[in-house]
Length: 192
Picture 1 (cartoon, helix red, strand yellow):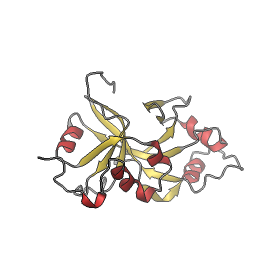
Picture 2 (cartoon, one colour):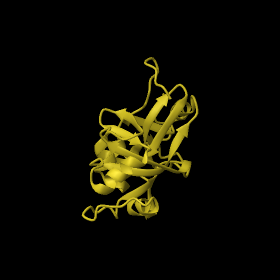
Picture 3 (tube, one colour):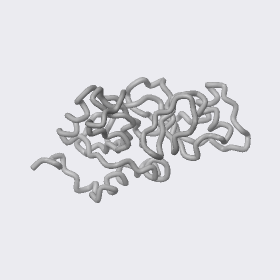
């Protein structure tokens, strides 16, 4: 997808699910929009860790050798969204120099190539990263329609919420970053 200068892109913004959003794929999620243009949007959910799958499991399955001194066995793998569940994507700080990286903003990249995982295994990868399987996708005008229907709040992405805030409080912290109280959100918010 190519971004045009006259399109109001939400790339590098969070989509924060409103409390009324009952879709099991997105209920109480925070999704980082990675790309958004007239052709649609793609994003990665940043607060849905898988219960049983860890980064070390993925590395073993791909036969990527880990540096013995680097402890990565407890790093979560996230459900990035309901599209292409087998596709591994690494959301990371910085843009790095890997084979296939989409620049999201000045401080964030999304890499789909194996070399970023190899770098992470040896300790040469990004200092802060999140591995997801799958992503969220929207057709042209679909995301805009959902926002108009008050399914989502939007706010500029904050890497600290992605990488430093405990996963179970990311939804609340994203809402609070807008100056809002999550307990006071209404399903009618945004309508006059």
